[in-house]
Amino acid sequence: MYSIIVVPAPAATSGDQVRLAPGERLHFGRTAPRTAGGRRHLDVPHPGVSRTAGEIGATANYWTLSNFSTASTYVVENPEGAGEHIKIAPGRVDAPVPFEFSRVVLPAGSDLVDFCVWAPRHDYVERAHTAEDGEPTALAFPLDRSKRYFLVLAALCEPRLRGEPHAPLPTADAIVDRLRPLWPAANRAAVQWNIDYLAVKLRLKPGPDTADAGPRLNGKKESLVSLALRFDLVREDDLEPFARVPVAGPVR
Image (cartoon, rainbow, N blue to C red):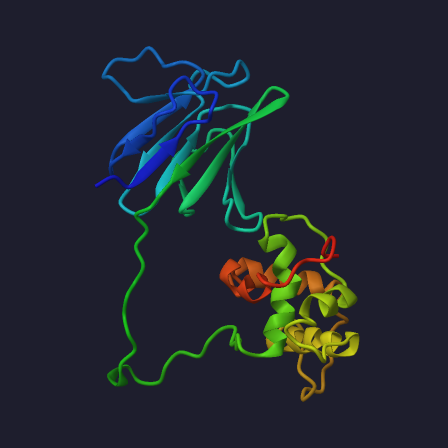
């Protein structure tokens, strides 16, 4: 069974997918290296790419990337992860990549070239909680997706989940406009109250029952969105309630 599939960029010499089984490796670079043993090679035909730029390794449930460059950092992006990415430093060997769908971006002179890697064979634990296990573990971030505060959090995260990782966050008024078809009584004060409530619920600031008010939380919305996206507290499928609600101009 193949564990990863490499999809060359459109400019590559071959548009065929390269399929790697666990244990197989694939060199990539400007031209195929003159080495014995018939190593597999992905040709990236750009004069700014090294002849032996790096290597991909396949395992059972993830893949690795080696950067053979002495000066350039490679970036592996998760196109489905709202800007999530990792950097592979020059000379780094066998760096593990956890993404199921990735875009490998290589600096090439004044250009950036890329190719995609799919890792469809990701394994996840499947184990139901039973009475014999004792008390269940408390959730780290207990959120109820049926509550209005979650609608507010989803609206905050929407621009970046829609593929704009550096988009400005919506204002309270913009959130009101976005939520009004789903929550007719929404207003600026209610939205701001829910943002404050989320900051306490997600432990970004102490609750009102504590004597210590804690430091003033600057960038509250930015902190909420950063935490929510980092730990997948809000995902793309959580935006489904907004699908039938047209966006009135930029979400700011």
